[in-house]
Length: 250
Ligand code: PEP
Image (tube, rainbow, N blue to C red):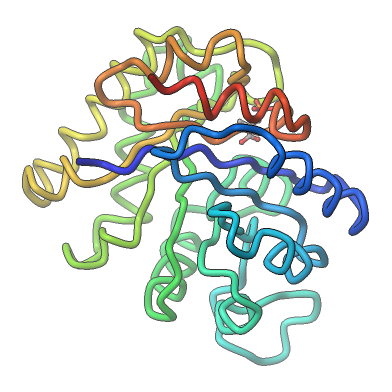
């Protein structure tokens, strides 16, 4: 059975004290115990988040990392540094990293390999822009993104991968892909993996949906056969909303 996952991407929000307060508020909520819950605070708040979530079942992820293990890369953070402070998960390929920091699928392939080699679990984000969706190119775009960034991975490395399909037009816009649109794309993604690897690999990988998931729409989206959870931006900054989304699973 695939893991059900809800991950909150806090982006560049929350000071350290605010971050700890939000963690305390989330811990005070009743959360569906079958769901793997992640939060991704900003780099400077990761260490305190690891401490604050200890023994809570909530896991901490970084929002990015550099592909090299060390060296002259001012401002960057390595996989080893994350692991050293107890962070075992990293989000890679978020559309904001792609749009504002020029991350390409070639670069992301290097980051994924580096994260995997170091032993991190990876939440890999991808998804089409609005123009791609309008022109009907969305399936090809997603295929290209996955092929370039992930399809040279060894089958064994897929146990470290969680996918997050995030149509860019739905991120932070209030516009959500319909449950049917999400299911259609998730099923397509699973078929791609089956064609490139095998059905065990395709059936085993959790595929999250991201893009304006809220308490009001989470249950309908999570009810889709190939949707295994969500990557949540805005709504993850409110403990009650985040908990309601986690509890959107039956
Ligand atoms: C995101 O940034 O990954 C995201 C899904 O944001 P939002 O939920 O705010 O659309």
